[in-house]
Length: 209
Image (cartoon, rainbow, N blue to C red):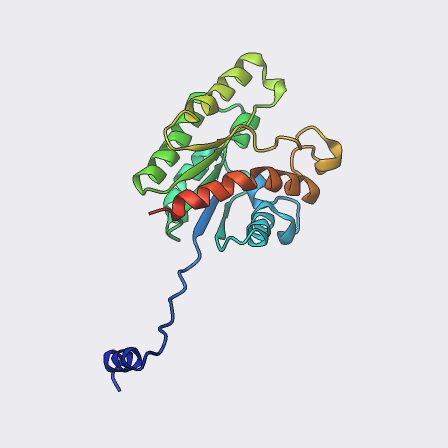
């Protein structure tokens, strides 16, 4: 029996029709080593821990790992098209830490991050931007200029913003690996727990008609 005839027969007999299960929402985590989980086992990294936290809260989203260790904002911008090939419905943008470590001109960092956010907005992909601070050894003027980049970008309409990705973790030896830069698994857990409400809000916005 052809499929249309079979469906009609099931309706005529009062048989319940199965409701298709929508595919899980895809959430892109575009970032550097902090997203990629440098120095950690896969299950201990940001993407895996965020995925587990979302499942524990009943969210069916799939977190796409777009973290590349050592990446700058320019690197993230260059590979954005490749990252969007998986058709994410929402995105977390965690870039800039390596720009600060390398003393890259804050104007260049801002241009790259703005281009990434513009590309996401053009595709109607809601985004969460995670802020960063420059290391203190580069001086107060650079630190202020670097920080101002994120403060300006945060004012974009509709953009969700987390002021500092490493809040509650940076500077604590117990929560960082030996390099003093990358979080331990426990440090990542703190970051995920703090970001979870914002990520859930991001998913909610992406799921809205």
